[in-house]
Image: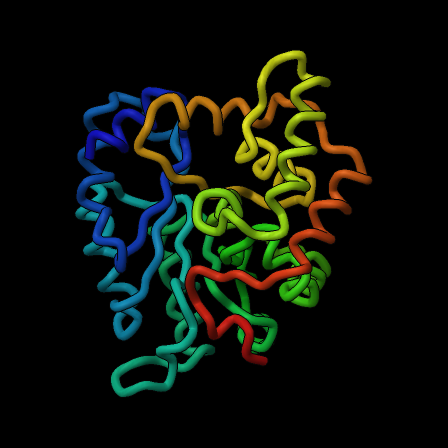
Length: 260
């Protein structure tokens, strides 16, 4: 809980939760402890194990969060649909729409959806998904190019989970020397030291992604928040990062994303 309190007091206003993370109760405590007004916060949560009864799951999640609504509710993954006791893709989205209409979520979206999943949802949607939260970093830009283009065409925001994974999880890859060179160049333009993970957050911003970050360290949280203020990457620098990331494939989670 205290990492959440620290994040809120450091300046974060968006809180990403999930039924599967089992972190909603601690988030609820942190929100209460922070003393920050509810209207100043953007609270996200995701439904996974509770997909069999979305309305019931949301009510339980809201109790844990100590809230009467969330700002964004996501379906966490699509691969449980059609299993015993689970809805179809279409049935699940209709349940999400009912939750929105009941005022329990201001906006609804999805997570870890492929183009095929999005097409099935959009075909029957009264309320379109506003977000698809997926793992995204330079090593996934090329494999995800079609999905990124589809989402842009459909005005679905890409929430990038793990945008700094190229340095936090996958160091030692072909991106490292390129990122080091670009970080040095950006630091010179900023006239103050810049960290590689800040460059990656700036990249996500310039590509139009909404970044989801994590850290338990105050100094890192402050660096993440200040990434928006560093100088923009040049088009050439962005292309260098793309080219280096395209030389390898690295994914931490959700291997189903490579399926049609």
